[in-house]
Image (tube, rainbow, N blue to C red):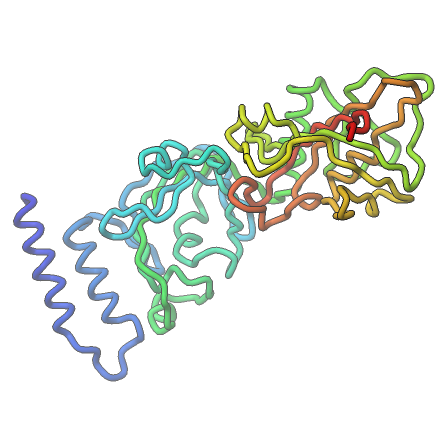
Length: 346
């Protein structure tokens, strides 16, 4: 069918839908379904329909672990509306094409929890059962973009929804039954490849790894409570994206320089326990993993010698399942390189 005839058929199909008033007793989304089905019949007549009403436009099977309900799929995707306008995406190249690329934004796979009512029903219906390495392009009707969970297509059609129809093209790049274990494995590999391993302690905290980078001294010891020290630090993701730093050069090199900010060492006030350590003149609290990294650093006990270390920790010790801003995605392990320095001169 040529493009002109296809367009005419589409217009006729949609006109028929618009001309059909909702019949009393029909489900909430029946008129919407007529519209969506007409669009499918014109644009993707060979698409395969799932039990809930998702249409599979393209499919490539994977060979890795199978995505299950109540698991964590690590996914790359691009989503559009029915007209092809991109609405969300994970790819850096897509951002560049759209002119929205930002050096401070994380681009890369996202973690989708496949549990009922934590992911849109249509996406869950499409992804559960796929295997790592697999790809699907699917058309999801608006009533299946809800987070509510039902058993049948009819129940979804009767459910009031303010969502829009969507096309998702996604690839499953990894899968985990337990996202914390998955993060720990990634962190251990990262520490081995980038720092030659990590230090071990008698009572290691789950999901936290530490490596002292400064040469040890015979006189090093713990800091006393209420001691004030000064540090420089750089925070980054396992991907290498730097999201915060006190170094001006590092900020400029990584595209996050802010002319309104003063880049200089920041004060840290020690405490009797790691969770009470504070930062800056306003005594701000710090995230758990950052505090634990500081807690394992030492007073070197010698003039002009200062400790330097790296701490890496999983998301429960950072920003959890929500992430933070555009730079730190959900379920993201964080890496902090910290160096104790001399007190800055006034």
